[in-house]
Length: 259
Image 1 (cartoon, rainbow, N blue to C red):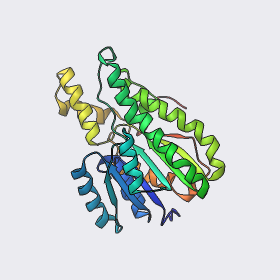
Image 2: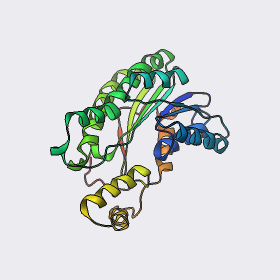
Image 3: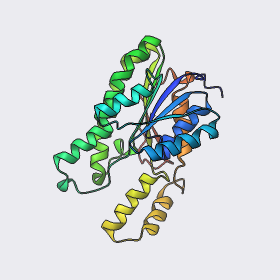
Image 4: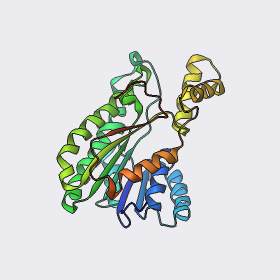
């Protein structure tokens, strides 16, 4: 399918690995000029250098931290006026809410709510002026099916989703959409860190927990980050202009409800 976005510009946060990297790859394959950002310069350089020959297009990169004003400035200096914005940040490890101090809550909010909303604030009006914009937030199924031990992530991400859905109703008339992807259990480094933490707290072997999580999913497997990348590229395409304010579960059927 021709996604109709060749020549557009995309700014992808967290594009050095996992789902963010898959989003960058699929957008570049669709002909988009992609700029990825990360806090780790070495990891970003490796990712961008490997993505360029993989997609046949130059993929730019910049060291930028979405949680800081300087980092957001750096991202927009490298990719001014993006047509496509992909907000993507690692979640925080599981824990006991009784032990979380305000500083930890603020750090989670900066990474998964305030930072992404600031990027939306700084890019949405130029998108409206150009009559094209696609904003995709990669969040988590936890905003729809929360787990107490993941409260830092689900709390912050829920704020981003609520804001985005409200804004989406005001921008769609200008062909600017905002949608959220809600991945379930995917075979990513973030998932491995999560299971390692569960292993340490429970005393059970990592391999046992990993296999158990895989078997417990109706699909009997973990998700492949490339599946999220493909969804992201479609939501960014010209064909998705009538779809906005949606939160799409991509979880192998794990969510127990109807809606």
